[in-house]
Length: 166
Figure 1 (tube, rainbow, N blue to C red):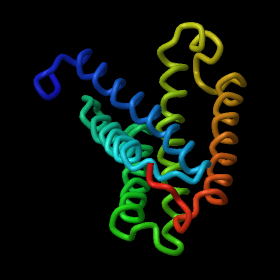
Figure 2: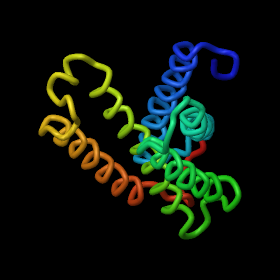
Figure 3: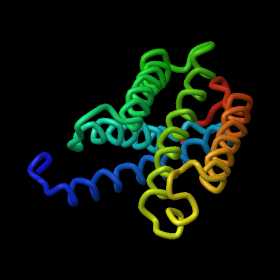
């Protein structure tokens, strides 16, 4: 039991929070690319992505896992993004720091989604049973390349002084 839920119910909740974080994160990145702040979507993205990392620590395990390391990194990145966005109001260099941190947080959540997909989806697991096979590595390289491109364009396109608050 985790927080009064069966492990399978808690896992479903964790996955739904994660997918909400990923979906809202792509909407936020779209806003970055089009010069729109999308305040409501940003709040949903940041909150659900923080919750994704926090709930990930509640699963019963016997030792530190790579997912815990990603969770800690994600929480640090999210703390900086939240600081830049809400406390420092995207002023000066905090604008691009926010963009980089928001995109990196979304990447980390997506990275874990790919890992979990290769663990849980039978067709993907058959392609890369140990996650050291080329299909897994190619999938992760494509995801990384996509986020590098999105982050680069996000930094170039998202300028606070001319950003619309949708």
